[in-house]
Length: 119
Image (cartoon, rainbow, N blue to C red):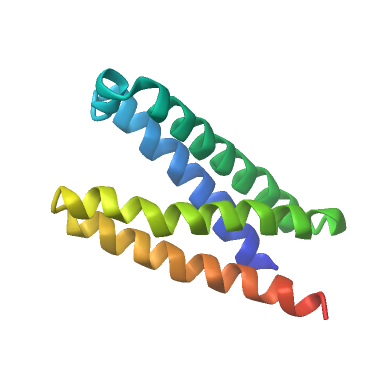
């Protein structure tokens, strides 16, 4: 469960940092063109990030109640890691597409031991 906790904390913080960077530097043109859609999207991203961070910390602290809650937030991250690369692929930003592929693989690795313990 240690890897799962590290993944949750790391990816949660990275998501918060990435979106904060994009927002502060004006790299979210959808705020002008599709404000409602992007606000809902941002809400989902920030909920996912905070959930990953908090459940990751709880896993590292060996809290027994957090396993299933972590799986929910990891599932939200996996969804994001599947759909988000399309946006960057459309813009030809292949390094970010590769980053999402690595994060997806690590997410699956982080979930696997928690599923195995449930048997």
